[in-house]
Length: 193
Image 1 (spheres, one colour):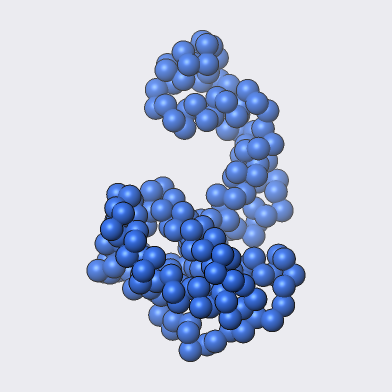
Image 2: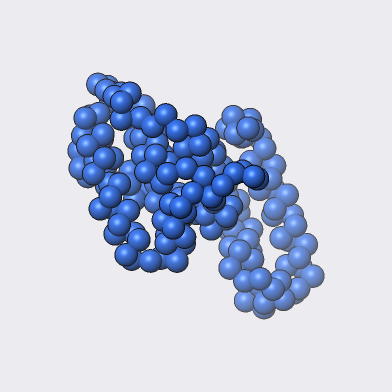
């Protein structure tokens, strides 16, 4: 998204990042009704829609935090497409039928399509990482979790009551093991875009 102009709706992304309650409430007030209506028209109810909305907001927050998400389209189009995609995936997984795709509701905004696709890939990578992370042994999980939270390896070693040299070597081995698990997963090749 190098030369693309940042959309004025970036304020919603920035508000989520800052945990601004006014912006978060505005997102729910302005953009949630469209999603709720869509989910209700497609084999769901208001509770399903609220789950989809919350999961989508968390995904956007995580992508913004980790990948410095820059919005180049209206937030409405981006948010709705993410929610729609998430709901259709849930329907597909649960085996529910009766999906009505109202093409008039869908945005024709190319930027929203691109951003939605990138966010879905990001989310799928996060899910794969978490699944493979759970397959690690407890010692590796503890060491990596500590190193995610604490910047200094000296402090990580001290918190786990191990030597600095051992912590560095073990972290390298654990990351290598996690990388192998991720790359060996059949889902990994589907995420190469």
